[in-house]
Image (cartoon, rainbow, N blue to C red; front, side, top):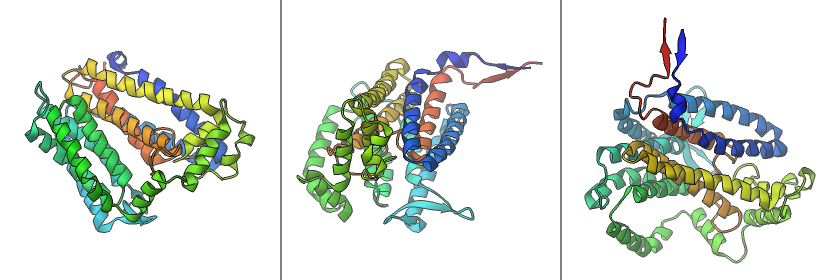
Amino acid sequence: MILFDKRILTHFDFIQPFLVLPIIILSHVLVSEANQILAMKQYVYFSIGFLVFIVFFLFPIRKIDWLIPFIYWINIFLLISVDLFGVSKLGAQRWLEIPFVHFTIQPSEIMKPAFILMLGYLIKQTPPPQNGYGVKDFAKISFYILLPFVLILKEPDLGSALILLLSGYAVLFIIGVNKKIWLTLFILIGTASPVLYENLHDYQKKRIIDFISEEPSYHVKQSIIAIGNGGMSGKPRDEATQTHFKFLPISTSDFIFAYNSERFGFVGNLFLMGIYALLIIHLLTLNYKLKGDYLARVVTTGLASLIFIYASVNISMTIGFAPVVGVPLPFFSYGGSSFITFMCFFGILQNLLTFRFDKEYNLIKFKF
């Protein structure tokens, strides 16, 4: 006879799926209206994402956390492999092709969970003192942040590289670093910014120039028109002309926030942003519950930081407040890589929350 361990229900965080599911459902409604073929593909992504969640939820992460550095370095090897024999698409070399099946993977996406877990492992091994990390420990952890940043930046993929960099240092900011170190960093970055700009690729410079110019780019202009067309409560499907007459580019992925605005208006945008805000706040407040559990705290903080950065950059981009970059809205933009990556994150987080008091991971007991 098989008995399910009911203690799992005690520590499982039900607030997370309660906040994530409305985002997924709303996304599917919009994608279905725009393109039925993409909507059918979403079911595949949903299925794979759910399986990934289950796998990582059941995986005994705490029991074999010594494997985390090994996983991190495998991902570093994959990022180096992209530079050596990666596949180029749209002028960027970011993918690796799996032999014989002609299926490609993007190592920068796989790197994100391994990266956050590695930070958690390092901080767990060396917890911060009362006044925060000093220069030595900060430099050591920074090495593990900067290494994937440089490799992803080289692909080139400035968006993913910056997101990784910002989320890594956001984790350190919340966990604790001496204030003098932050002050020094801000001064150095401000001083070096002209040099950093000159080393950008031409298309990256163009995005910045388009952003600061008086006249927005075509993509942003059409996005702003779509947002204005939605008004307060949105337009019926047949009257969402920006999307259905193909004026709004990439309406199901990069500019899906503008599409949501055209269909559901200002009220729909407030609803969507409100859910994101509640999800981020909920994840950050878990820090108080976890206290000395640094592995879980880092994953929680890292996930909250990633969602905040992704959502902020994407929404700012659609209204002309940020340069146009290929940054999706988590769980909302169409696409498999981002969705599966975030499902992986939530599987890891739920594992660390649910089983933090159970070293044996006894989900199921057998009784005869």
